[in-house]
Image (spheres, rainbow, N blue to C red):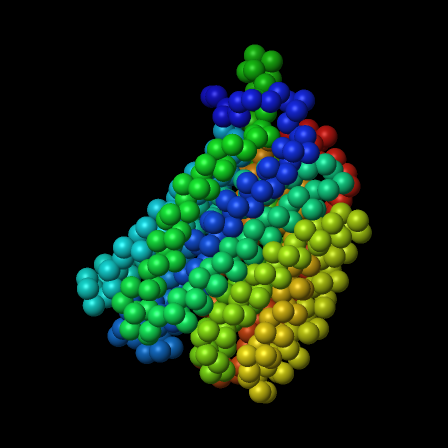
Length: 445
């Protein structure tokens, strides 16, 4: 089976500084566009809920809308396994281009979905289908793009290079929240319900060709496999990366999943649920809560490269451990302070502090995941870990917290949920090797 390899410079020129800068820029732009498409849904939940689930109560609408958002995460492990395997056989660049077009298809379905009043359950069904497609795409995107960044990076700068994965996700979140905030401020409630909520998804469709063009010009890092005659049975095994990951690296998969769930839950609650929480539970205006998400995305985008450099200097595990310890310590006081006297200023302050701690823990985790696996199965391994870790704990975090708030009637429920999850996720650090500054492609693949 042939391998898709970029034409042009020879292997000796693959990792020149100019090409590395181009890979960072191309990956960041494409990934930001994809995460804009994937996450903008969550900032529109309070508008989408009444349109697609009108028979439900206010609580039921939010619960059903968060569940619709969450179903996208059910497909992330599947997308991670299949697209990750595709990337380990046909190249990281080809996989990244595929995920971009799939994400655009999901946006098109959402933008065209009829409301419940127009076509009954057809609209919600199309929403679920679109989220499944987007989840499938996102599951493959993170592994392929992070692997490309890590494999282009010098060993002493892998944290810096891979930090752009988290930075680009934050950029996508910031752009999504900013777009919805501007629409909310510019349009009336009636206009927003009639057509305004569709605009971000139309924007998502229009950005796909731009991202695809950028990615088509990135340099591939996956070398062709050895000839079957020279490699014997190992060549055949190399063409089945998913089987190899599940058969040979089960312990690494389990450790990786436990490591990733803490950051994923924090990202979902702090980054995506807080607007709905502050509006529904604390009574703050929608524009204020969306502005808080813009702040969170901006902080993540600006901090990510500096956190990557810090992790390269002192080690991934130290940065992750101490940032998570700080997160656990400040969560309860932050929520208590916010709930005691809700205001836009307090919300912004809490979000900004938690955003800093989120960036400090997430950027090094994203670096450690591809470092766990040998090159021949790296994208598949990371995609499986990331997809499984985020599918339940991350994707349905908003659903769980909404349910907890309803059952307990305790506004501290999000804080307690985060504290327990982050603590459990941190313990596994003691059983994971920190490969900061070491070669990762010297092991047998």
